[in-house]
Length: 111
Length: 114
Image (cartoon, rainbow over all chains, first blue to last red; front, top):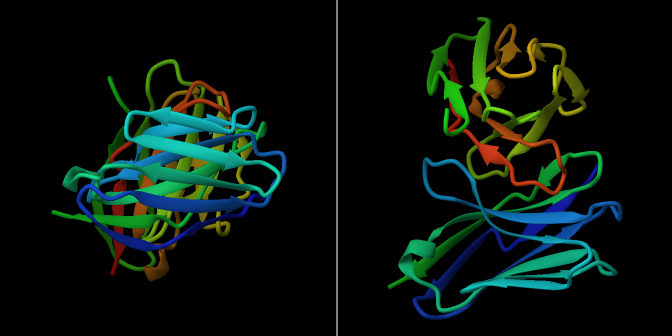
C-alpha cells in the first residue's frame, strides 16, 4: 500500500513567520492530497487539498504545492498566528479510495 | 445528524474483554472509514466500507478486530480479547464515496485497556 512520510515532526515558529511542512508518498497512482489540522482533543479537519492535475493551490494564508515527478507535496502557512498551533497531517489517496496519513507535525506558533 | 457521531467517547476495559465501538456517519455518505490513532501518531487505516460491504479490510491488525455495516449506514468496530496495545483513539470518518472528497471525522472513541 501507500507509504506517506512527513517531516518535521515538530516545528516552532515566531508569530508572523512562515511554516513549511513536507510530505512524500510512494504510490504513483495517488492523485489526491489533502491536509488536515487537528487541535488538541479535537477531530481532524480538512484545511486544504490538491489534486494531481494541479501544481499549486492557495487559500488566503495557506498554500499547497505538489511535485508529481518527485512524489512530494508541501504545506505552506504564511503570517502564522497563535491559532495556527495544532498538529497537521498530510494524506494521499488513489482511485481505490484509500486515504493514507503521515505521522503528523506539531506546529507551535510563539506569540 | 449534522456530523459523524461516535459512541462511546471513552471506554475503559480490562484486558481480555470484548469491546464494541459505534459510528454513525453523515446521512447519505456511502463510504465509511475506521482509523486508529495512537498518541503522537497519524491516523492508521483499519478498514473502509463502500455501502454495506468492506471494500478493504487490509488495515485490521489481526483477527481480533472485526467491523460491520449491515445497512450501509451505522458501523460497529468489534474488538475481541482486548490487549493493552489496543489502547488508542479510534476515529471514524465518512465521505460521499469519492477518493477526492473530504473525509469528515468523528470525535473519536478513546479506548483504554487496563
